[in-house]
Length: 246
Image (cartoon, rainbow, N blue to C red; front, top):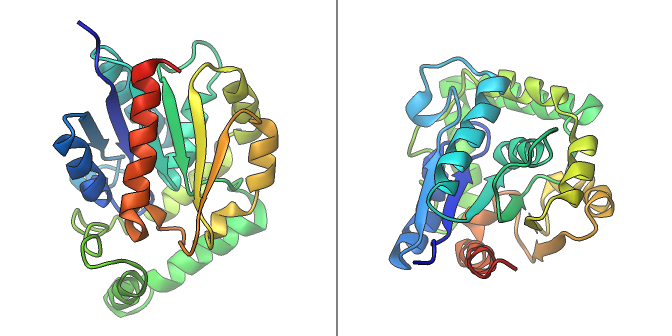
C-alpha cells in the first residue's frame, strides 16, 4: 500500500497552531493527514519558556514522527518558516521532508532590521491591554471574516515573543540555505506581494536557485490567512509533489 503524504504546519511568533485552522480543515476534507504544532511559549504550550533549541527540536520531532507514516510536507510561516528553514538546512543528516513551503520568511533576522521589529512589538505590548485593540484592528483590516479570529484563538504569546525574536539571531540561515539547495526536497518560497519579510528574497532565491518563488498579489505578511484559498492551493501542490515523489 502506498504511503500517503503527511503535512506538518509551524506557526509564526505570538500566534499558535490555530492560525492554520482553514488549512487544516481544507486538508482534512481531502483526507490528508495534518499536524499543526505549537512552539514553546505559544498556544497549548503558553506556560513554557521560549527556547530556541526546544523550538527546533519540536519541529524535528513532529517531522520525524510524520515521516514514519508517509512522505512529509513541511510548511512554516514567518518565525515558523525561519526555524523550519534552519531545520531543513541543518548539518548532518537531512530532515526527512519531501516538500518544503517557506511562507513569509525570506529575510535574515539580524541587526537593525530585527531590532526595529522587536521595538515595534514591544511598543504594541506597552499599550493598554497589551495593545490588543491594535492587533485586532490590524487583523480586521487585512483578513476576511473566515480567518480573522484564527490568529488569536489559541491566545497571544506576549511573554515569549521578544525572546523568540531575539533568539533568531543565533540562526545561521545563509549556511542553512546553502545546505537546503543540496537536499532532495522540493522547495517553495511563498510570499505576499506586500510582505515586509521579502527583504532578502533575492538572496534566498540565489542561495536556493532550484526553489520556486511564489508571490501572491495584494497580500501582506499574513498571506496564509489573507488569501486562504491560495495558501490551500499551495499546500495541495506540495502534497501532490510529495505523493508523486517529484
